[in-house]
Amino acid sequence: MNEITPPPSLGPDVEQVVRDSFARQGLMHHLGAEMHEVSRGRVSIRLPFRDTLTQQHGYFHAGGTSAIADSAGGYAGFTLFPPGSSVLTVEFKINLLAPAQGDYLEAIGTVVRSGRTLTICQLEVFGVTAERRVLVAVGQQTLMCMHGKPDR
Amino acid sequence: MNEITPPPSLGPDVEQVVRDSFARQGLMHHLGAEMHEVSRGRVSIRLPFRDTLTQQHGYFHAGGTSAIADSAGGYAGFTLFPPGSSVLTVEFKINLLAPAQGDYLEAIGTVVRSGRTLTICQLEVFGVTAERRVLVAVGQQTLMCMHGKPDR
Amino acid sequence: MNEITPPPSLGPDVEQVVRDSFARQGLMHHLGAEMHEVSRGRVSIRLPFRDTLTQQHGYFHAGGTSAIADSAGGYAGFTLFPPGSSVLTVEFKINLLAPAQGDYLEAIGTVVRSGRTLTICQLEVFGVTAERRVLVAVGQQTLMCMHGKPDR
Amino acid sequence: MNEITPPPSLGPDVEQVVRDSFARQGLMHHLGAEMHEVSRGRVSIRLPFRDTLTQQHGYFHAGGTSAIADSAGGYAGFTLFPPGSSVLTVEFKINLLAPAQGDYLEAIGTVVRSGRTLTICQLEVFGVTAERRVLVAVGQQTLMCMHGKPDR
Image 1: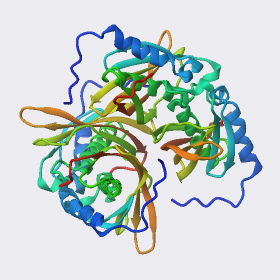
Image 2: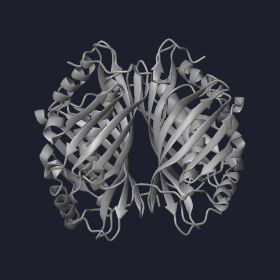
Image 3: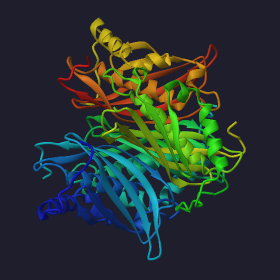
């Protein structure tokens, strides 16, 4: 089955499970990342600019860009997993398209294909200011569903 | 030309330029990463374990693993660039092979092919304790040399 | 510049240059691939099923899927290149989502970001029958524009 | 377990199973590819140059390069799988380092990490003549072991 036919609305529990898991990611907290939107098969994470997130030219470091892209994709996949499972990133690939700058970065993970064992996500990261929203990175990610291994 | 034939020893200036650039990466400092070894076409970076670097299960977050892998590869390429240039990550792909755990992670970037415009690196990340050194991630990275745009 | 703002219509010459180049690809001819649609920043290629294209289970081999995906992306990028240039694939990554089967495969390459030196494309491959059109692979590709090196 | 500790020698059956499976790949036969060496966790495939394998400049098309790289990696993983299973490529990424030319290409797939469900391989492709052996592509691949689904 290749088409994802999500129920019309997301139950409150799935979102809470996702947000609780995100809150346990020390790195996301340390970077200052915030989970923005959670829907079935799609999650966005925002990362406000700070000097502690830069590379040598003063832009966001690709490591920060990648970190929120990976988390956004991982949780997007997780929203479609059965109860009592957890998510593992198998691999991801990311192209950095433009200098990662802006008031904040927004990473969006979207499930492209959800299978019993493996889930594939598309990753996008935007650099956002009041005036502009620029695509700064695109990626592709493979996730694994760990059945019977709860996230907590 | 596919083979890299480095001079027998690395001049002190190249290493200093690399270490100075690394010192300007706010994110590396914020994560607690340290540049370990610098040689021509090969750079290693260490990331000691901290609670601020975790994902939801308490291991190193893939974002931290990726961040030091990306920096290690970027600086490995940079060691072979001409004076007055800087380095840009075009893309990278990383496979997470095993839970990223240990006293510290060590990322090693090694140049596979160095061209005028593009440089390709292999990325490896190990989870290290006093007893074990486990390969936890492997990756592949494409860099671009920005001629005439000094790093600083 | 991140947004692609193509002219409203594709001139006849660009399409002809693309189709002529495709006709010189011995492999595409050998596989039986046909260039389908050509527009600015987007090219599709079809590959009818033959026994000579299979892997060990009788589906299309990933090598065929990848070959037409790579060519579709490469030519999609090429449509946006300046006169007198040619295209080189730097790298691509492809996820195989489902068994590649159908009367034919259709690969679609779409430019995501077009720069002076590098162009990034999204790759999609569908398995098509009279009744179904199933996404069987997605990929991401980096191309290089070779200025002053004509394709022919 | 990250280290692969292969038995000192490869039994004749595993090699035969691999070679029989390869012989059923219509595409490999159609391209003229030959399985060269088979050992535990490592397989090489050769592809002699033909006009039917070219891209528009007369070099090997990346599709051919990728096809033999994918098969070499897939069978390298397969050599470590349990009886009665088969292999599926989840994804691969390949960097094209130099024009793919020579009397033949040789793709080598090597297992980096073999797990119960997923196996990760490194891919290398060389362009070979009587005088030179040039690395023309490197890649990384994720395979899935299909337990209880025999290859034939």
